Length: 610
Image 1 (cartoon, rainbow, N blue to C red):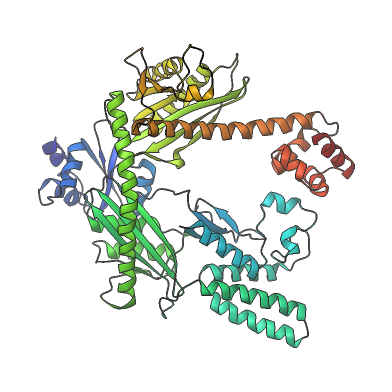
Image 2: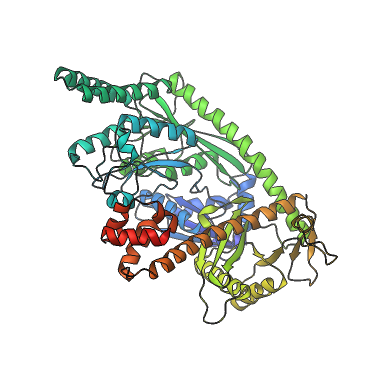
């Protein structure tokens, strides 16, 4: 196979572009870029690169496809886009980490607000973070709210309020929802909030001090007192930030720790002379060099939402430093430089990033090793054909046949991959049942997986032999070669044990394709604990979706019994409040405004709900 690939590579163009390596199933397992496609791909087969990782990769490859681009810069951008689309197993890929919070300010809104989000999007808004420690981020948010009176409420609440909320009463919001606030003044406050988030609170403090003195001179003592409190809030924030450099240039420091195919990369971000935040990433199956590892992380790390520094500090010169600088400068709108320090503050902070990388490596891969061991033990106990890397679990939920829903959760290398979770609404022409629901969810998931080239290695069904049979029907009809098992909870024997404690003491039972007799798993076994965690996560996820559906249905049913509430008004109330409890707690004025109805009708609605 290697000789055939080498012969094919000799016919590649000597042009810049991207190459896709595929395995025997046609799945893209690695994507690379090149200034000269022919030379770069042929280099894999010359024996010049003795790294075990490269030899390991070539053993998996059965086809290499080139894509020619107009320039090396375009190849760089296309590589990033294709990695995001295909998610190749052996590429460095930064995953969305929904565990970390960021602060979002959308300057396109007429009245921008401070918003906590778990996903950074390229939507034109400004994002600050993600913050590794949520308590630090929440403390920072409290400082901003004390210093600058911006709104934090949702758009639904903002546009439906008729009187200011408690935040206005305690002087943490100017109340633009209801009061005549000067928009230019409000937007100036937004700029001040951004200055705080960028670490430039010192300049803002001086500006506010001048305003306070001016207010005192005009005998506007109440205004001066408000400004005094804001200045004090900024000073409190400043005392919690150590000044690490008198040079106030924005910089990011990248370093890494690596053992074989395992690697960790840490980013230390400094803003206005202070450490603003850190970010840590861990990777398995790294088959590229250390230089390519850092280049790939840097290339994917930055976008308009996250923000760019003037300097990126790295431990050594990267082979594509000039290309990275060109691409990042174009995205940022100003010159971005990659710098290798030899001494001084930059060198000291780079060493600190290295310490963080080593620490993150130790913490992450200890957990990684335990997860990998659990998956390996599971594969041995169930006699699976391979150790599964991507495991998905399907569960369905219904209450007496109503609001039946399904969900799929995903684990990759033994850890939850929440960006791959999916939820399904299920409808039936006949009488609904769990078997039909499982059939529909499995069918929709596997059909989508076939189309997108994204199928799991192992599919777990929450249920018994009947549910497994339905899932296998779908798989065989689609001619897909993946393993499917069903997991049933332990149950009490027929000897009369009916208590929950007795049922819990019985072993988990796994139904597999090759046997009519389920496999019993020991209760404290590492493989059992892992598969229970997968099943319980699916159960939690589908139940939360089911509760949302039930709540909306209950609200819809109540509203249908009230004369004067037609389809349009009901839809407005559902959009504004979403649940019975939210409508119960809403002020009468908010209810009337959201439903565009009289106070008399709003009172009627409140009375019916309570």
